[in-house]
Image (cartoon, rainbow over all chains, first blue to last red):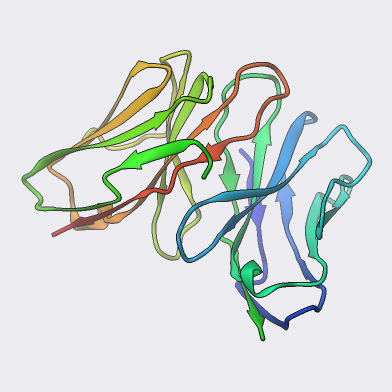
Length: 116
Length: 114
């Protein structure tokens, strides 16, 4: 079984600052995917970024980037130039690879607050 | 908007009621999922359907009964629920093809059991 740990229940930064959310995971799988999802107060779960474990290059999506350390089983999310709209719960999630329909294993989430 | 819709958005029911949650997607996805999000707990996978066949049931109590009549629709039938079943129920879908693993979520149904 897989586990995902997010050790920061809540973080608060000023607008325009850079913030890093941490995530570690444990698995015996060699083929898997990692995700960061954002859940704003509207409760809609939105995909932020996706990383394939077999790719060494870190994924980036505009202001969002990850630091994927496979050996350390670490998958942190960096948000640059943070904006008020980034305020949300952020969930790290794991999924086994293989092409089948597998569910996601989620961490408990980090509540990120962007202060004006 | 992810293209996954859920109805109703809010539901209040008594412990003896029978109700159903509906999820719909017209994205061409062939896998659909139910998750439960309770306060202070990580999201929990409840059911997985792939090509309309159930492939996973994470020891969910029988008072929750899923149904997937076609690849675009997923239901969660509820009966004789308990107050601890109050939660946000999220539906997700994912596209076919190896490597296309990203799940897209609906807005959820907020369920309150009295």
